[in-house]
Amino acid sequence: MFRTRFRLVATALFALLACAPVSAGNNKDTDKSDVLGAWTFQTRPYRSGTCLMTGTMNLSPHPEAGQYNCELTAVEVCSTWGRSIVRQSCQARRFGDQVSIRSQIEEMLEAKVEGLIYMPDNFTLTIESADRMFGALVSAVTAPAEFRRANDGIS
Image (cartoon, rainbow, N blue to C red; front, side, top):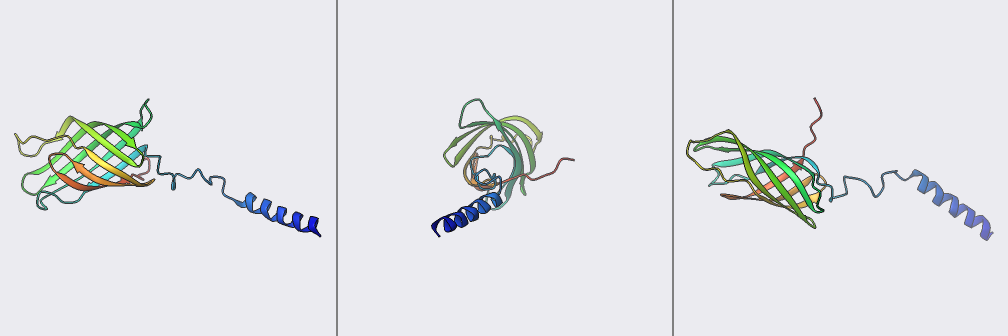
C-alpha cells in the first residue's frame, strides 16, 4: 500500500515538473536586474508646465560590474522657446535597484533659441520591473521621469 502511494505521488510530481516551463526562474519579465538594451523615456511637464522631455537611451555592457555605457538622445520641447534635440554619451551606475545616469553633451542636433545654454541630462532611477524604471531628471531642472523598455521591431 505504501509503495503504491509513493509511486503515485512520485509519478504526479514528475508529471508536474515535466510540464513546468523551461524558462522558470530565468524569465526576463521577472528579472529586474537586466537593464541592458533600448529604452524610451518621458518626463512630466516642468517649468510651470511649459516644457516636456522625451527621448531614447541605450544601455550597453561595461567591463566593471554594476556599470553600463550608455547613449541617449533627448528631445526637449518648450512652448516659450521651441525644441532642442541633443545627443549625449553617458555612464550609468547601478546600486541595487537604483540606477544613476550622468551624461555629457556630444552634439546639438537641433537648437532652441540661440545663446541659450543646454545642460547635460542626468537621471536618478529606481528599477520597478524588467521594462520600467521611474525616477527623476536632475539637470537644469528637476522633473519626474519614466523609462520604458523599447519594444520596436527591426525594420
